Length: 316
Image (cartoon, rainbow, N blue to C red; front, side, top):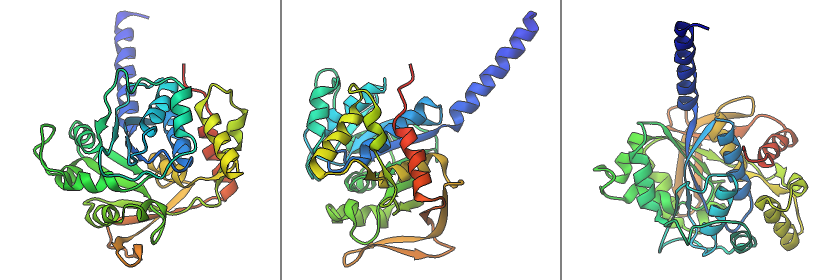
């Protein structure tokens, strides 16, 4: 191969690399990471999809004030070879529903959140990450309470950006994929004031996900080695609640955030509102800016796809 051919080869290689990076979905993952285990399954999926070159995981942010959740979250990121992913949390206002796994994961698996890393305020971290990204490039995936989203929208200009929170979101966020359910379902009822502010005030499209009850995953995690945190998470859940296969609400939201409308999912256009009396209300409307997600394939087939993403080994 002559020098000209070598130059051409590396030129096209650079183009391919840039295309791959550009095509990655940039995600901020907002999770309570305490009261249920589908959050853990969803984070595992994101790490697998990051290994596959499909995701750039910008930050992992907690909506819970449970003491052990940040350490457990850091333990999972560390297990996947990404110990430096920023972690944020609400320092004062937030929801703590308790956890059957967070303390055990934090104490059993390596993490250095309390030694080398600083836990950041959720709003400060949101603003810093968003300000550093290209316009309309970030997907926010929320699988917990809406505390952080409400505070982000209400935030004022700071050293990261001269924009208000709502202006910053409007400029930088492509859309918000939120595991919300309907009415006063789980992720909305514990911080209702935040739910109202976040849902009614979000300035770009919201993708509301509601399905997952009958999409059961988790059993395959027990075939993994004991050195894998997710095996411990699902074993502790089974010990406490008597079930190893758990509903996959959060995983569905996460998978859609990466693959979009596809053979798996379809979207309906409309408007999402939150009322004090009812909670989340969906109104179908072709002129609305929001979307509601529906599954297109059988529950068992979707469960197999999700679970396969949950049990991969970290890339060497």
